[in-house]
Each structure stands twice: as C-alpha cells, then as structure tokens.
Image (cartoon, rainbow, N blue to C red; front, side, top):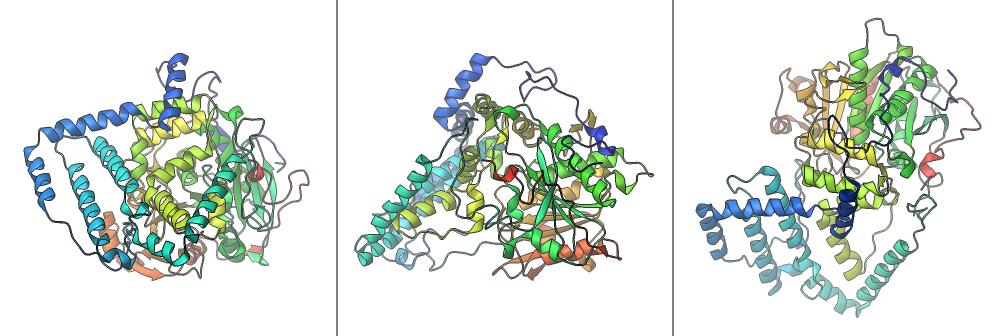
Length: 607
C-alpha cells in the first residue's frame, strides 16, 4: 500500500466502514425518528442565540420539580429554617483547605489574610452561610429527579459565585489594599488588560467558510510548539498521520499510535520540547505515530461517528500496520480514547485466531482521561437531557458545526469560579497578568465539531450510554468492551471536570482485560501533560502485590493505592516496555513524501 493514499486504505479494518447515510438526513435521526420541521429548528436556533444555548424548558422543568417537592417537604423546610437561625462565623482559616486527591477543589477566594479582619470576616462569613443554605436547599429533596437536582444546584452555585464578595472590588480587602498601595495603578492596568482582551475578540477575522479565522497565538505551531521532527506519511479528508523521526539507534518493535480528541488540536501532546509527550516517548526508543484531525467546517456537517472510526482510527491503524508490520500500542486521549475503545472492541469482535499483525492488530490500549461509561459524566451532565440536546442541535443546524468558542464557553461555565471570576479579580481588579504558557496558548487554538457527529456523540454516549450498555453499533453490529482482551493502561486525573476519574475508572466494570489504573494529580489537561521534573506532580497506583482479581470500588482503590511523587509518564513507559518485544530493532525513519510535507502537517495549521 502506498502511504500517499488519499482514501481509507484497503485492509482488514475496511469491514468496519459504515453504511452511507443520505446527506439530507440530519445528524440526530435514528431508527424511526422523524426529520424535524425546519420552522421549529429556526425558532429553536433563535432561542439558543438568546439563551447562550441553554434550554429554558429544561431549566424551568428542573425548578418546578424542586419547588413542588420542597413545598411538600416540611421536614426539609424546618432544616433550612434552622440553618437561617445559625449565627455566621466571624473567622476564616488563614489558608484554604488543600484539594484532595479524590478530586475536590480548594476554595481560594478568601485565602488572603485580610479577609480575617473586620468587617470582611463578617461579609465573607455571611456569604459562606448563604452558600451553605443554598447547597442544603437544592440537594436532598425527596422525590426530586437526580438530573433536576443537579441543574438547580448548579445554577444556584453559579449565581452565588457571580455575587461573591471576592468579585466585588469595593468589598474585596485585597483589591482595596492593592489600590491604596499602587495609587490605583492596578485598576488602570486591569482596564488595559480588559481592552486588550476585547481587542483580540474584535480583531478576530472570518474566513470564506464563515468561521473564525487565524488567531494570534502566543506560541506558534511549528515554531514554538509541535516541533518534534517527523513527516506526514498519510492524508485523507479527515486526518493526517504523522510519523516522528527516531532519536535512538534501536527502537521497540511495536509502534505507538496516538489518537487525540478532535475537540482539541493534537499538539497538546507535543507542546514545548520539555513537556512534549511525543518527544518523551521517542527519546525512550518508541516509534510514534500521531493522528492530526482536520478542523471541520460547514462542508463536514454530515460526518458522523462512523466516519471518525473508518476514515480516522481504522485508516490510521491500517497505515501504521502496513508501514511497520507489527502489532500496535494504541493510545487515546479524552474523546480520542473513547473512539479508540470503540474501535478496539469492534476489531476484537471481528478478529480471528489466524489474524496477522499486518492486519492492524492491537498490542495494547492506553486510555488517558477517557470515559467509556457515561452514567456519571460529572458536570457535563448538566447539558445532557432531551430538551437540552434538541436546543444544541438547533444551535448547530444553521452553521453545520459547533463552534470552538461555544465549547470553550461551556467549559468555562463548568468551572467558572476558576476560569471566569478569579480571572476577573486577578487580571482586571488586581491588574496582574498571568504570563502566557504553551498550554494556555494551545487552549486558545480552538476547533469545531461537525453537526452530525457531535449530536450522535452526545445522544448515544452521554444521554443513552449505549457504549457501556452494549447498544452501540459499528457497521450494523453491536460492540461490547468486554470483547477486549489486550492489556490496558488507564489514566484518570484527580481534578478533572470533563472526565471525572471515577467515571474513567468504570472501565474496570466493563472489561475483563488486565487493567493498570493510575490516578494522576492535576486536571483534565495539566494532569496528562505531566512531564518528568514538573514540580508538585504525583500519581497513585496499586502495586502488583496489592491487586486483586476481584473488582474494587473507586474509594476502596483510593485507600489502597500508593502515592508516588513525580510524573506518571515514567510508570507508563515502563509498562509499555514490559508489554513490548524484548528484542529491539533498527530505528525506523519516516518515508519521504514531498507532497505531504513534514510535521506538524497542514491540518493543524488550518483555522
């Protein structure tokens, strides 16, 4: 097979290519569902613009559920009345409680020592009392649905965070003290920072496709980040496949294929040289391949999950198998890990005892902050019900994709205390600007999600949990993760708001494959980009002697786990080495294809 092939290669994985769906079918149609009325979609689209994509029906139903059940709960009402009569605390700890490895975030809003002085201790104490009241009022109401409880509790927390005294400069003693000390220069600096941020938004260009054009990033792709040497060895309409140049004379026989999420650009795993996972693996003697997803526009509105399997994962697997003729260590991050789990299960279902390595045989599966069971998806569950998904479909209907800025806004809402309000206080009120780093620059380099794929992903995984419950189909046949028998290395991160580690851990219930689970410190991104030498990094795992053949609940696992300071990358690389052939081979160099170019490729540079 010629690695210049522009269409999905012919190989064993070809049997998984999906049956074509007529282009006029919109993305969320399945079974006997009727095509929605365009007039309804137009109205819902306008409502979504007004409500920032939030379904007013969904929110209203949640509050009606809460009000009616609370009204019928006199015992709960008495509990709330007792809370109101409880006096406010007039003192605060000098330092906030540290976040636990189980995922609880520290509240640093009142960490400054001046909050312990009158009258600010009274102000903050009253706020915390109010916060405790609403936390109690919106949880534990008998008869209320769990989803509605979560929605009401979340909205109440958002409103409280918005009006926290730490956000109001005239009530924040740290801001007042800084203003006096600097003669008001902090406020001038803050105004300048605000104008700069608005200027970046106003200067954003729009290209012919109708979506945002090139952004000015602090770290340029191919110059500052994504600079590990390599070549593009395959390209089709959906992916570029990059093979990285070896840095050792001998390499492990089995190559590594990394499947990043298409919600993000791949180079989060190839940032600066010092924190590049790709460079780390290459330096350890691994042949590394990376999928770089094309950033879709309106022309890709009908691409679905099956396209991402057949033209993405399966095409890359076939190409790597053809180039190396070896079994493949596969790695999936975030949504890329979910896709990898699906594909690996589909291949395991089709595999025969006589299957040869040249037919894309998987050696191992590593899932990094990737969910396979979506029954407890964390705070993303806030946006998951039929009404909310219908609103999101209408929001994407006009453009044919979900814009990257919309996704960024959703993630900011989920963690608004840190990503919105603390930024306003720090940068606009205190006037201090956080120095840009490579991870922040990457985070600003947003991508889009095709209309059909995103709707399928949310409906079949988040809403119906079809993958975990054995209903998800590939090529018309249901797949089961229990068909996986290859070794698995699974990483959760302690403070993950996107893929909560307890949700990631559920793979232990879905597969009987040998699984090594690791819990890394940090969040969804920083916990994965955790290079050796990074300060204050640690991870938890179960030593071999502490493992049991029986299932352990997450909390039991946490109690038994050993904490190791440093980077989990080293632990993972040792695991990869243990599951690779003992005898290393001569280093593989990527083939030269002038028309395809060198790493980082062209798709990652597209706006």
